[in-house]
Length: 454
Ligand SMILES: Cc1cc2nc3c(=O)[nH]c(=O)nc-3n(C[C@H](O)[C@H](O)[C@H](O)COP(=O)(O)OP(=O)(O)OC[C@H]3O[C@@H](n4cnc5c(N)ncnc54)[C@H](O)[C@@H]3O)c2cc1C
Ligand SMILES: NC(=O)c1ccc[n+]([C@@H]2O[C@H](COP(=O)([O-])OP(=O)(O)OC[C@H]3O[C@@H](n4cnc5c(N)ncnc54)[C@H](OP(=O)(O)O)[C@@H]3O)[C@@H](O)[C@H]2O)c1
Image: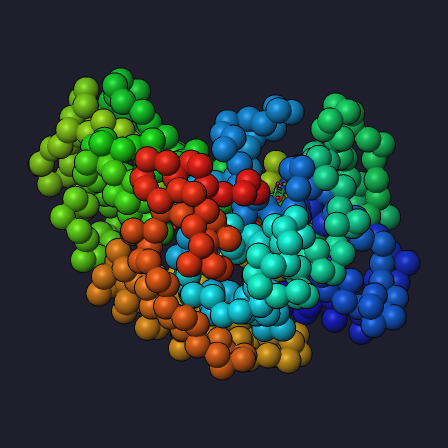
């Protein structure tokens, strides 16, 4: 929608004719840019030359799961922050495209909280392409938004954008790109517009607490959390009280952690937790394996997971084009959360997809305002989905994913999951779409066997 707004605006004024647009990143945000340009092209409209640079080997951004942590084979920081057993924490009815429902993609209604692999497939559709149509029991249906629209050819994979500078005299940008497999910096390319869609959940915010450097167990940030079964039998400290803290605490419990203590800075999450998960005020220091908290209590833990959020990071942008703030709903200097107004002659767009959190009223106003201005043609008010969602979470945080919601555009209600999230260890797209068929893994122990590899 954000992208549609931009392109419509530019299209109306014919600002983009004969121009070049650089898109940085082929995650959901960058792919939306390509999708909307492609839509215009299909309508026989003139469009600029669009080139998308993606440092990973495939599209999907965070949704492209990989076991890798640290740096990748080219020495680049690993982008991924998602984990093996991740399911959507918000109902799909709050995030699905108005013109392409999950039901349409899968050929049948599916429950409201899909596992990661099912969301990725909805976006890209490669799983279906690799498997016979009979898997979903239908002979012919859409293959994901990106594959169906043949968006791959716009993207140069394994190409990282290293530097973007604005040329005041020529009113354009010089972009330095590196071809990673060839370890080669390419000749500078010139672009008229730059869309920054590099995501903002990849660079960990890692605070320091006295004694953490002497701690005897494992210390990781949620960015490097991949498989909750690594914490089986462990006493785990989770630092933070955001959505990662909540979800990772539940994941650890699901996959057999002994107990989990979540420690908060501003306010506790306050859910009706199962007995193995407790909340304490922020830690003050760590002595050996003992963690001391602000309320004077202490606890023994084996491992620590920092769920302390992420930092905006634009190392490739020259200083005056860089957003300075931390993650938040109203980034300073971004008109309508989209257009950078402090440099680059209003020709840098920052695409920042984020899923709505509890600030529902704010997000509702925000998306309805932009969709109206963009003449998007759909009412994107999803508050009727998110208000009950918050209540379900407060009532039973382990089981909120068993509720189902109604698609805002088709009016169809989703089915309820056959097996509740906390008991479901097969989170392959195949099993999710065909709950009567198992794909192998059915216990905490062999969960690594499942999945088709994204
Ligand atoms: C653990 C976790 C769970 C989440 N779960 C949900 C959920 O359930 N539902 C939901 O709606 N949202 C969820 N989100 C939010 C998620 O950020 C968005 O769904 C979405 O991935 C954002 O898309 P994006 O394209 O803006 O960024 P990303 O998905 O991060 O993609 C950015 C892309 O840019 C590329 N890139 C970065 N730097 C460069 C460079 N210099 N040159 C070239 N390419 C570059 C990256 O490789 C990547 O492919 C979750 C986030 C996290 C961290
Ligand atoms: N299943 C899923 O779909 C799923 C799972 C995980 C994450 N996500 C998504 O991932 C995104 C990021 O969520 P997040 O929870 O990682 O980040 P976040 O929402 O920014 O939360 C960060 C938490 O860390 C705390 N914190 C930050 N600095 C700290 C410090 N120095 N000391 C102590 N505490 C500190 C913050 O406390 P304060 O409140 O005091 O600032 C906050 O509670 C969200 O969009 C979320 O939806 C989704």
